[in-house]
Length: 475
Image (spheres, rainbow, N blue to C red):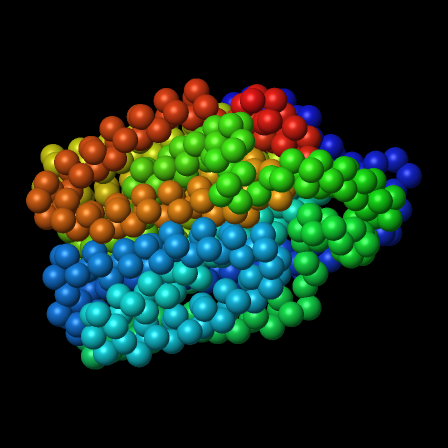
């Protein structure tokens, strides 16, 4: 990897160190509260992994309806990402996160109380609206309040909270299954837990500031300066506001932002296509087949049902550990080579899962070999691919359409996720587990070629400088 570091490592000369420490503390609080949206994203997407086998018995699910229950959340997320991005640009990042907290609560409660398959599909769709909105709004909010040299680390905290939410889902699934055994409705207890962080997110965001860059895009420069003074030293806040203001005025003159401007501005159209490609790259690794169907994959490999639930916790642990490593790496290596190394790792792991499932006899040997490869896969996915994807999508679009642009790219991401989540059970049923994973290997090779040719490098630049560079590159 290229380890050239052009990122500032210290505040500008003349900055008040005491002010810096206070600003750093404030940034940490903002990051913790906002990333509860990521925690809910992770829990609500991961909980289906362990709840699905019990839900299948209670609701009488077939392979097709299993796919519908799983993927209805993803279809909702596709709509939620573009609507959430549009609302975030129009009404503000903070207000949109407050709305999402309400949707998370209502959607989780509806899933918990679902009496039929049809009701569950609709409830999961509503929950998906919140997941999609959070996937766009939270990274953009964090990117816009962060200083350039800390942006990678702070935005990636959201990815850390996503995988932490998934780990909590896997852990609570295993505990509840052990305690509840085969009792009816045990899956409802797994689902209802996510109402609690939704309450924390809503109350926490009530006292958080709005994004200073969104405020500047609305011409509210005085309010933007007040927020910047909370998260920067005095001198740096004023210098940064001057840079943001200059770009905001220029964007306002050019009329950037929205569908009509997307159609009328060639360089933004090209940039959007790159965003689509980055979004697809993250999903065609097949990561969410592991997240949604990991328990069933391990059961198929040779684990008993309860043992598969427990073993699946290893997937959550390695995801959290790898994300810590990813946060560390993002401050030291460039995004593009980091993404390519992650892709090579996941391709190799998927190839070996397919080979082991094909050649090893059923039993403990195959079960642990497959588990070792799912853990390896997630180490590369969560340590490199997912952090770089969400961070890059939060960085590359112009200020006035940042959330909208990321939202449109996220639609592609979630629709790809939806398609994979929907067809995976049928692919495994029709082709077998080995052939299915070999298909993901082929898709991974295509994705690797795309990254090598088209992925822009975003590290070490302010959002304003990055926008100017991308405009020059794609004009």
